[in-house]
Image (cartoon, rainbow, N blue to C red; front, side, top):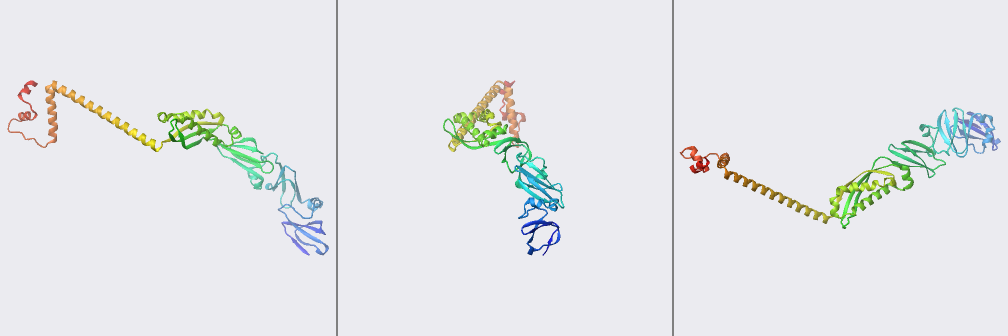
Length: 372
């Protein structure tokens, strides 16, 4: 029986179940009636020949000279290279590869050291994806590395690669940049039982990420709760009127309380602000009524003040006019000038113009003599 073995494969000849020899590419003849069979094996995959022990195959010099045997002990990973390029990886076991057309080599890596060392990122990315874990820490973050649940070290910004075989690798990322905490819609009772709705905001940044993650399960919830309680405690001590009087001091006072806990919370509070204080409907109506009354009272005071000032001015003017007849006449002429501006013409009788004007303004010889 003739068989054809392709250039990219080899044949293993068996007789009655026992390995005989390696068959090369081309036409080959086997005799099935004599119990001969052939198993084909591709060159680009691990050699797996059913029914043939590896040591029996290695006893064949033709086979042994053209294969690479990869022995991977427990706790190691073998990275296979073909012509210097990463072609794959293997965990513990024994593997055989043909070495006809490509130079096949391998390197052993101890996976008890979780981080991958000795390979470039480009080489690692050519490995099977299930074999490694890639951790990326962004700029402004720190990564807390845990191996088998135990803290190992902090990771700065960058990419890190770890074996995903023996050790459980996890990473907790913490943002070190300034963060804003928004406490919205808080229903808080004042000391006199007035319900207020408060919106508050605070800014903080993490100062000790390792201690925070080790001691606090959910640090963001913890910071939120502490800030919320500090706000409630401060507002709850004052009556409603007292609180309105010192509304501008609420943010700074709560911030001081929070900064006193910086070390315990492993953060640094940098600023705080009171966004809104929303009053209940009934209280808001009362406040509006009070405000309108206050403004009306202020308007009345201003009107009375202006009336007093106007009366005083008139009294002073009258006193001056009474004491000085010339000034009085000048004032009359001033008013006459204003009247002339308002009318088109003035009809004067046939007498002297000056005399007629004197009659109009009420100047008589007696007043004229008195003025002199």
